[in-house]
Amino acid sequence: MPKFVIEREIPGAGKLSSAELQGISQKSCSVLGALGPQVQWVHSYVTDDKVYCVYIAPDEASVRKHAEMGGFPANAVSEVHSVIDPTTAE
Image (tube, rainbow, N blue to C red; front, side):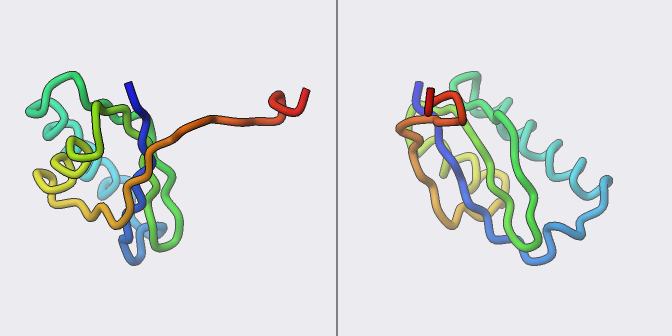
């Protein structure tokens, strides 16, 4: 199943409280439950003004449907073609 990176522009994301992040996470999980098991949230990285999410989904449309249903921005959705790390150099 393809993996996607979603860039979400959320001004002040890095200043969100633990409770706010929990609420966003709960909303995301609720939407995922409605979409069914094919769309999976792996994890997210919260920076100053953006959140980068990694999802497993059958296609980009499924990722965008999650964003629409949850009221989340999905400013860019990119399919991951390869994952590399330091061991790739060996």
